[in-house]
Image (cartoon, rainbow, N blue to C red; front, side):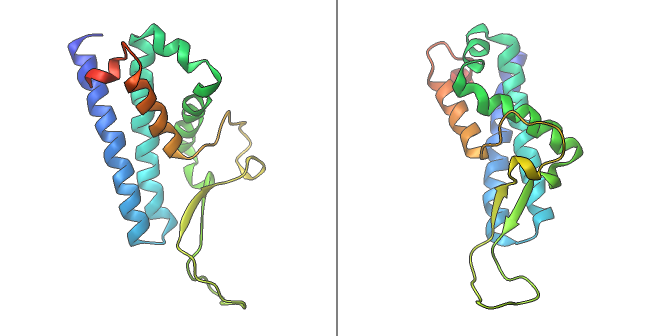
Length: 152
């Protein structure tokens, strides 16, 4: 991997981390699904950038990506593609107050969930896992001996 590519992986990993922080803050500040969509799109973009750079530069990463545990990162490609076309159709917000108010009244914090596969646009996704799984994938990759993420 060239120095420029190593720098790009570091920038993309930092972008991924910062977008996750923005998503957490946004969820604490608003119940607006459209506001939540922006950091989710950022997370998908940056995570896919890290994945693409590692896949180009590290054959060992590519091999691990094709193991069963790699489904989370392969599913990310579908999510990123949807984020450029139809991300609002892939997530839903639940909780908080809604109108009209019905009984029984319950107030729960707003949470964002992935739609079930049968509620998604017609394209067939490989995986719909929470973005936390992507973060765990990158953490495991960083710990792998010889990983290019260790230097990022």
